[in-house]
Image (cartoon, rainbow, N blue to C red; front, top):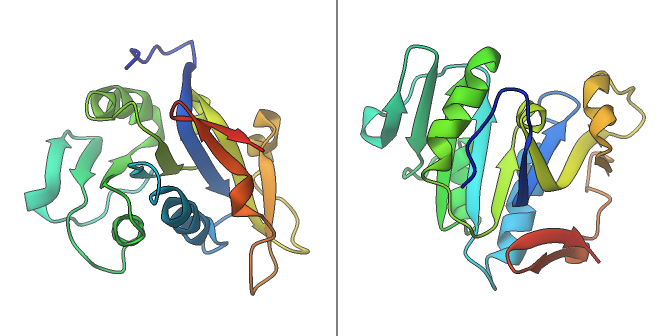
Length: 181
């Protein structure tokens, strides 16, 4: 994988990135549906990145620094990263990094990432990578409070409270790179 540089974004055409308009808008649900669909034909890696450091199982720690922790999810729980594993991801990584340390954490994580497709839930990763596809999930009828995501021209997915308005079959993989049909 390519080295992370502070001033240059890295192209990750094998990464599908999902951000959202806040908590509980359907980001993980969307990620899990994509993983379920694609894992039937390709090994998918799940990735969850958060800016908050949570309690974690030390058995799953790959890298632990003062300002970030990288875990490989192995537990079956109701955590978002575990839900990705349960949806069919071959492996799942969970990164907890303060925003200013995300580039460093991602550089360390990159050594573990495969060339195969990666489905990632993260609000901050778009600042350092150019993903193959970028989705933004929001509730119908609510104003976009996370306007900074719009500069990256995401595909907006609306959650009407019952379902997400997106046809998952439009997501295509060609040589492990994401595109829309």
